[in-house]
Length: 115
Length: 111
Image (cartoon, rainbow over all chains, first blue to last red):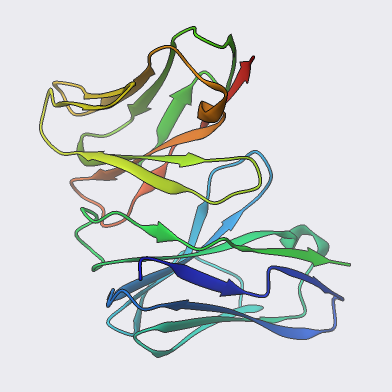
């Protein structure tokens, strides 16, 4: 299984809502990532988990809260988002983190709209 | 911090023409990766280059890593409509730990 899955595919939420994005991989990868991608822009790294521990937080606002319940799952909890947070949220995994030598496998993304 | 720039931003070609995108880093890279993102899709890994001056080929795609390990290029020979998408380079510097993506080159192919 060389797939990263993400749910939901689309999400529309108000600024007072709380929602969660989910990501799963069964490749035995020990590094998982959250990226944010705006239209016609490259993916921007948000968080990196390595061996289920948060290793990189790229100064992301606290209204985004990542969680790694186990080595296969990665969640992104959303609360009190702003309209400018509307974007495609991509999850990725790689064999391990830190070396940067490993290819990253991306999921299909969750397209988020904040009203 | 590390910056990775790609040119051109956009390229329209007639099917059958060649296409090249260039990637330049502000710092020396330990490796560079290339990804393709189809319209409405997600980035898909194409290749990784590690050695200075390395050249790798995948069918009609040729990837090069500069001697100084600060630049890279992707060349597509005889483009096809299936080549449509945005091509991103992503580099890892010797100092940093993570990949930095270039801005991408969006390729459009007219049949």
